[in-house]
Image 1 (cartoon, helix red, strand yellow):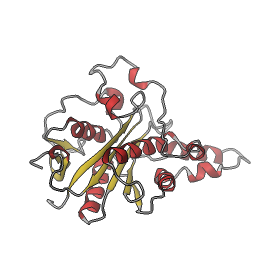
Image 2 (cartoon, helix red, strand yellow):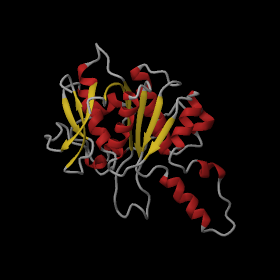
Image 3 (cartoon, helix red, strand yellow):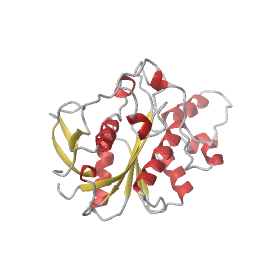
Image 4 (cartoon, one colour):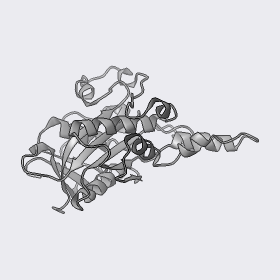
Length: 265
C-alpha cells in the first residue's frame, strides 16, 4: 500500500456563493439560512464562450474546479490525465431526453444527447485544453470519491505523470430525488508523485481501515452534508488546513478507504 503515495499540488473548489476555495475557507462557521444557496453559476472560463453556453451546471462546475487545481498546482493542462467522479453524472440532461421521448413527434436535441453521458465534462475539458493524455469517468455511489482517488493514486504510482481528480455533483431532480435534497458543489485535486521538498501536509497515502477518526473541526454544513460526494469537501478542507490529518473517504462505512495527510503519511 505504500506505493499509493502522492502529493497534492493543487486544489479547486466551487459551490453556490463560493467561487473558489479562498471564499469557502473565509465563510463564517454559522451561515444564515439560505446564505450559501444564492443563485450562482461558475465562470468556467476554461471553456470557450460558445462551448460553455451548451453545457450543464455539472460540466461548468467540473471545468471551473479543474482550471483552479491546474493553476494552483502549476500543471500543464495539455499533459495531465483527468479522472472525473460523479454519482449521478448528467442526470438532469438525461431526464430531459427521457421526457422528450414521451411527447409524440418531439425531436430529440443532438446537443442534449451528447451532453447526457457520464464523461461529458471530460470531453469538453479535453477539447478546450487540447489534452490528449487521456481521461476517465467513474461512478461508485457514495464511494465515488474513494474510488476516484484510488484510480488517480494508482496512475501516479504507475508513472503516468500528473493526474487531476475532478469531483462534481448537482442536486437530483424529481422524481428521482424522492425528497432528498442537497446543494451542488465540485472539488478538484491535482496529484503528482511525491518528491523531496514537498509540503509535508500535502504528501498523502491511501490506506484502508476502520473509520474511527474524530470529527472534523468544522463539520460539513447541512446543505451539503447529504451530497453523495461530500467526502471530497472534507478532504479539501483538510488539505487546505495544512496540518497532519486522516480523512475518511467512505464515511458511510464502518471501515473503508482513508487518506493520510502529513509528514507521517
